Image 1 (spheres, rainbow, N blue to C red):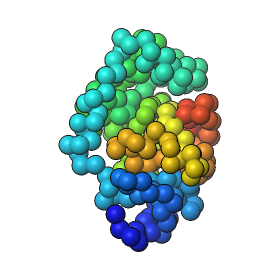
Image 2: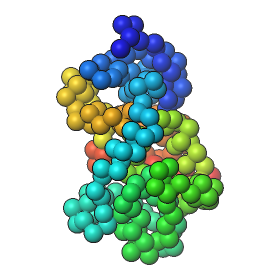
Image 3: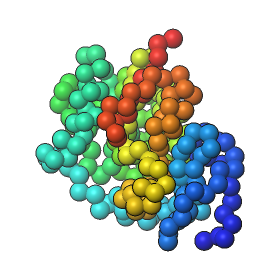
Image 4: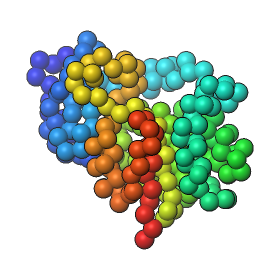
Length: 219
């Protein structure tokens, strides 16, 4: 690693020159001085083949009751906020789409998108009443751009439901299991989501430590 790493721009808010705040044996980690995002520099991102190989190891499946319980922590509060007939997108559905199955079973029409497993560009060109991204945002190489694009696909009053672990302070961060996954390259804090909500003009709800709802305010 470089002895003096560059002061990199934030991939969420774009503010320049954010110093490194932590380093382990594999990677550097920078912390945005405006939105508090923690992020790995782009030159240390995994290549697409390495990234997909890691995802291929996932064994998530709709028939797994434990996985359904895990997803239920987003499914239940989001479902309670949706009117009948709402249409949703499961963004980053992975190799074993399950949340979309749960919503379909509850009577909601669902579309899927995943750059590796369901690369349907048309799904990103339609409008939705809700979008889910479970264990996804920590993988985004351009979170500001990607989340901004998803936001434009939400109808007024629509909701973006996210599951991701919230970043910890430096001492806890050093021992945090979440940074051990080489495909995890950005780490949101409560402050990061607060900045994002203000930027989007959204109402923010943090339901659980890793369940976040962003609602698009009516015009």
